Image 1: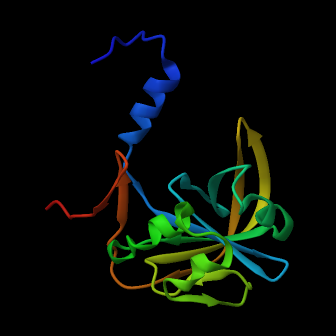
Image 2: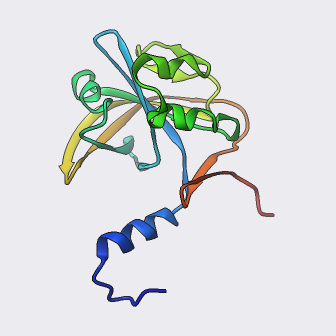
Length: 167
C-alpha cells in the first residue's frame, strides 16, 4: 500500500477509480444520418427536478461531435447478457459496424437504442461543460424505457462482472 501523501496523484487516482464499480452503459447518438455509440461508465443521475443525468465523454471520442451537433443522446444501461457489446463499442469496431451486434432500433427521437437494455434514457443536452480532456454533457431526460428485471453489467478493475443481490 502506498503512503497517503504519494506524489503520484494521477496514478493513485487511476488506481482508486478502477476500484469504483459502475454499471456499464452504451451512449448513443445520431447525426447526419449516421449512428454513433461508445461504452461508458462515467454516467450518473444528477437531479430528479428536472430529471437529468450527466455523461462524461473524451473530446477525442468519435461520438463527441455528433452529440454536440444533434444535442441529444441515449444512455443504454447494459444487463449481464450484454457483455459481448462492451469491446465492440470500446474500439474493437468503429462507426456503423458497431451496430451489427445487438438488438438496435431507432425510436421517436431518431436516436439508436438497445431494445433489450435494462433501461434506455433518452436525453436532450441542456448544458455542456469542458473539463480537461472531456466534456460533461448534462442531459434533460425526455423519456425512459425499462426492460426486464434489474441485472446490471458492472465494471471494476478492468473486468466485467454480473451483479448479485445480497440478502
